[in-house]
Amino acid sequence: MRAALLAEYRKFFTTRMWWVLLVTMAGYMAFIAGIMAFSLTSDPSSMNMGGSDVPLVIPPLDLALAVYTLAPTLGYVFPVIVGAMSVTGEFRHQTITPTFLAEPRRTLVLGAKLLASIPMGVLYGVTTVACTIGVGAGVLAAMGEDPMLGEPEVLRTALWSAVALAIWTVVGVGFGAALKNQVVSIVVILAFTQLVEPVLRVALGMIDGAEGIAKWLPGAAGEAIAGSSFYNVSGLGDLLSRGQGVVVLIAYGLVLAAIGRLTTFRRDIT
Image (cartoon, rainbow, N blue to C red; front, side):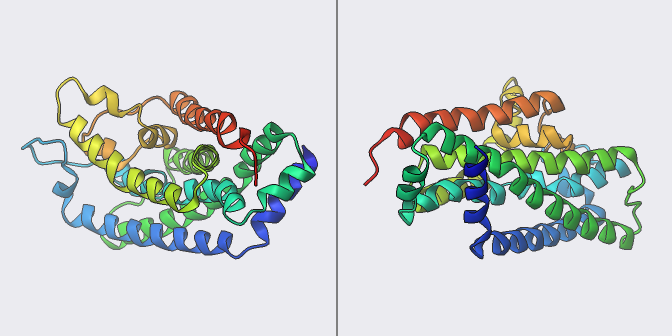
């Protein structure tokens, strides 16, 4: 396992893609955090997506958490892509053949990819959460709001947001194993994370009796790990507990990995 893990890290850090995606993710989330912080402080009603006519009043802590958790709420697509590419890239460039020749135990190879993705996810998570909070807090302070940086809940949420993003990388590896075509997997990831699930959650949040379904979706599970999100603050249903979120999101990743092991990793490699 140690040799397989080292091989995964070499594959990851010997290309430019890891830092290109990292810089892109950090810059994108910092920009979104600044825009969201400005929007929510200048027009709090923009958060009222629950269909209520009552003006939305956001407590300072909830406002800060809605901004600071944007990385696990919207930016998780990046660690998912990173995880998926660690598998799909090997099939695309045919490096999977020497990988299996060096280590014929395919379950061990997949397990090494899953484990190796965790530190990579931590790197992406810590960097992006720091950029999100830094810019978001700056804009909140500039708009006359308390950034609440000294609150224990803010620090706890920042830590768990990074954990959520690390777990998302594991989910990405599982997804890449289940769907080995790199182009198709990236398109599906972008479509689901940026369109399908957000629309589905808004729709379910407006249907009486269906709100509870949305919290079991993967994106909502990631937000539960963080502890808050702008979906939750805006009244679109409750989140799972933090522990439940961890279990549910890891389960998504492991189920996808199991599917990949029984399909993609079982087939002959040519």
